[in-house]
Structure formats: structure tokens, C-alpha cells
Amino acid sequence: MPKTDDLILFAQVVELGSFSKAADANGLTNSVVSKRIARLEKELGSTLIHRTTRRLTLSEAGQVLYQRARLVALAAQEAFDAVTGYSQSLQGHIRMSVPTISGELLLAEAVANFVNCIRLFRWICRWRIVSWT
Image (cartoon, rainbow, N blue to C red; front, side, top):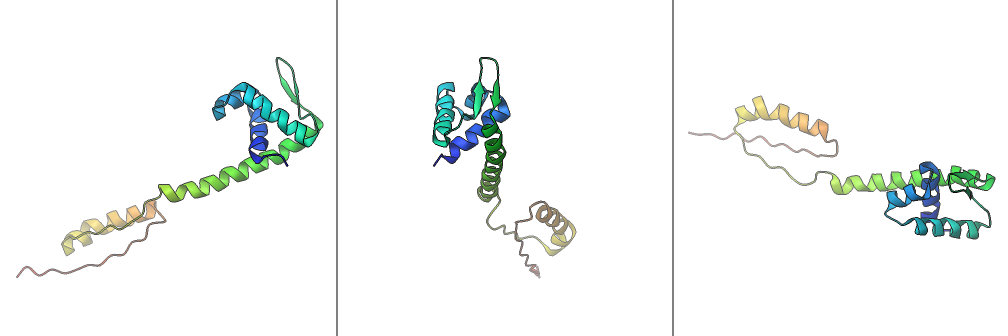
């Protein structure tokens, strides 16, 4: 069975229009990209890309595969994006001690704006009246 990475690389080659641009985008050499596309073609038993020195054109099988490979690449990117947010989101506790008047007049609005900006944030507020006498 062909590797999913090769399928995604194939979609990138088609979208970028060249092996060298796909190689640059992935930190690979041109020969590695060429070998991986050749491996994909061999495993599928079909020529996917007709290559000339000036341009690439998709075969009929390449067009069919590209439509599905594009969906695989999009699904993979959406999955990575969904998980990436977990490590980059704010987490933890914020604990504040402020006089009641400052909390009511200044802090309440600032905290509300903060919480509205960051939807995953959970806010628990406890007002404590401190007597100075």
C-alpha cells in the first residue's frame, strides 16, 4: 500500500507545479521528491505525472488521484491544526487579591474582555471583603 506521506507530497507537487518547489517546501532534495513520486507510481502501477524539462502534466490517473490526495492533505492539516491549539492555548490559574472597589470598577471589565478573547479560559472569581478597622 502506498504511503500517505507520498500521497500528500504528490498533491504538493501538483499544487506547486514543480518537483523543486515541493522539495523546497518540505526541506527535501529534488531527487528524494522524484524517487518518492516514482515509488508511488510503481506501487499504483500507473504513470501519474508526465514530465518534461519545462512542465508537468497529470495523466488521467494522476488527475483522479490528485482530487483524492488533496482531500487527504486537507484532512491531515485540519487534524494537526486541531491538536496544535492544545499546546498553544493558555492554561492554568490566575489568582488576584484586590480591594472590592478596584475589582468592581476596574478589574471586572478587564477580566470580561480577557475571557471573551480566549474562549477556552475558565474563570472563577471570589470577591472577598476586607475590613480595615
